[in-house]
Length: 358
Ligand SMILES: NC(=O)c1ccc[n+]([C@@H]2O[C@H](COP(=O)([O-])OP(=O)(O)OC[C@H]3O[C@@H](n4cnc5c(N)ncnc54)[C@H](O)[C@@H]3O)[C@@H](O)[C@H]2O)c1
Ligand SMILES: [Zn+2]
Image (cartoon, rainbow, N blue to C red; front, side, top):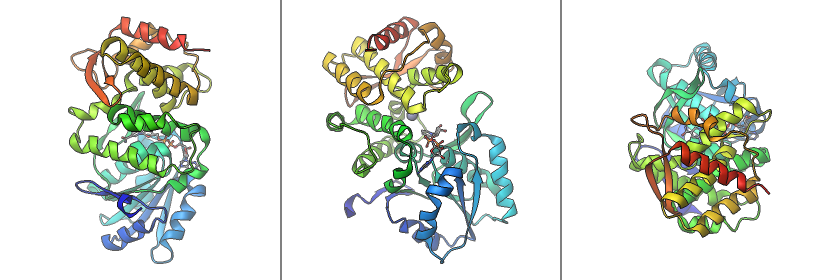
């Protein structure tokens, strides 16, 4: 186990630590003037007691609680947290511990980065999505008006602590939401891992740590090679161009909208189809990608047609020169970036996805 306990990055570590003792070690070494833990109502119940037990009586920690959910990833929630920090007299030597999913991590990191021109923060991700994706790579921020992650910055935490034990209380749907990024990481970077993921019969939290570790390693390698998303990092967007459009559509039209990861699954299937059409992805690989993802996630009754998805695609942050672009695959593990996407492509991809309904 020891060899796979820590993934070092250039300026911080990702520690796999089910005991959370590395948090206490970090606080002790950092000589912080105060420690504040940011939670939401779910992580306060399910995760905070574990952290408090690990910290013991050696440290006094204050807690700031925000309301769970993407709808609260806003500047007004930031103001609540900033006010809380002021009330607690947190100075520039204070530490913020972000204990929660991607919302807590993105918002808490942003809050810490701006408070008194920046205080230290660490990420203790408690959802699978946050462990394999959101907490690695230094992207922080909040939603603004109708756009996701419009206000934000790149800044690395002092430490990321991954304890897959937290996932035991995560609702099944949230667990599968994070699993989609595990599938994505394998598809863009590791054909052998993709082969082994295809053997999974169920997506469960038990024995998940090796999969999380492997996935984090892939994300770490990609973000380290390209921290500011100039080139290689774009491969992380596989499934996300069409996925984001489907996600936005679903949010505006479905009574029970798709979660991000569920929409990305639809996006990966459609982009795998386009990969077979334009980039030589083998028919067998397309069949395996669609088959594996549908087996775990089921088929979403996509009501939107290509013309209705197109406006969302035009707003995609990854576009350049007014052209819609996406990431396709030559083969599992071999992505191609900056592939142009036309309305006709989207029409065909939607038709393919719909044809998979049983
Ligand atoms: N920074 C990045 O690179 C990056 C990457 C991917 C996603 N994100 C962001 O992450 C966010 C989504 O993250 P998420 O899926 O973790 O959502 P989330 O933070 O909303 O958490 C999902 C739900 O699970 C609950 N929860 C968290 N941990 C729990 C636990 N251990 N037991 C029981 N319930 C628990 C939360 O309270 C919440 O209700 C989005 O805002 C997205 O933009 C950021
Ligand atoms: Zn994603």
